[in-house]
Length: 528
Image 1 (cartoon, rainbow, N blue to C red):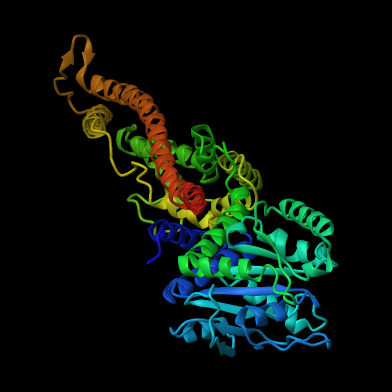
Image 2 (spheres, rainbow, N blue to C red):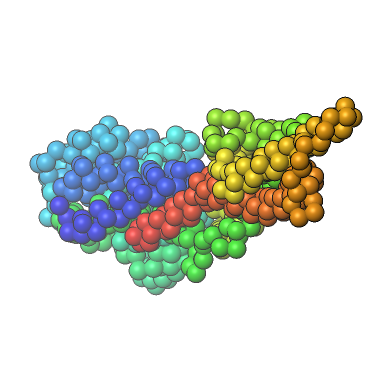
């Protein structure tokens, strides 16, 4: 394995993570380009570093095929005045090791083994003579574009007449900024210039390359016709092939370019996260949309009605049974069960608007400072559950223990006392009626016990009735206090349940997307 492979392996693992996390979140072309680089890197590393593939590219008439023939020492590429001359890439391979699998991956069928190796040639060097990048044939230009993205080393063959061609600089050299370590520029046909003109041409070419983001790229003056500069070019290619670093350097440059394209997704200093205040505002809005006020009022009234049915004055409490139970009317279950559908109305338009506003505020601040598309991604994560919000809230209410099944301890003793007072009242009434009947029938009046000066039957009737009424009033007050307390407790329990709903269906997805962004940016940082 070439030196630097562990670092490259870490960067490629980071690239795989970028592709995995970026799908559905980043712009598709950006993700597809990252996926293409990852696929290319995996295949290129599997094919090994024994060969260095050098693409010789140039414009029509630049003399690149003549240059390839001169480097090979024989005519392996067709040279002529007819344009375009080169219609498909031709490979020239130095060394005994087969480059077949590598050329199969590059889809280069035309191959030639260099027989007589010049002194500067090295085993493993593979030259590709590409079609003209400015060919009138579209398929030729597409072939150049494809191979330029796959090869290890790029040699751009220019000529004194068209070295400043905008098509070359805008379409190829500028997008390859950062690939200086795997780029050579050859000014061919140098024999057409005098020394002063050649120096001026080379200086201007280096200036253009610096403007393209390729400062310091080796620029060699060569003449394929006279052989001037050919040894220097051949030695440079041989040294690169012998070092067996070009394939790794090309992948590192590709990773650097990908990292640069991804870097705007991770602005420095961006602060993300869900604020506590926004979390509370959302839970409050959802609790209100769940009908917390209606439920609390129903719990309060139901508690009072049930308490009155047990502790109220026995002679009028039956009237309470004519009124429907507030909780049963809303079909609120005594025991929590999410399988039950309540009779609560769904969230009103105002409540929905409040929930939407809370979601906008929460997601807006959570993704504050993040570039597109993250605000949209975070918003979609938060609103994914709002489509079935009424059903979710209804199940949340049905699954909440509202505390209605538990009865206060004081009700049974008070109810028993009311029963005793009622018996006393009835006994006093019956006793007095018996005495009245005896008097009407002129029967002798039996002895009548007194409590002080008050006859016992009268005391039983009036005292039992008054005591029962006072006890009912006292129990009513106690039930009112208990009802308000239970209403507050029911509201707290419902809010906790709604908070769990918000956590699982809204907050957790938002935090997951923010976590994805953090992990994605960490991976981008490892890329370069």
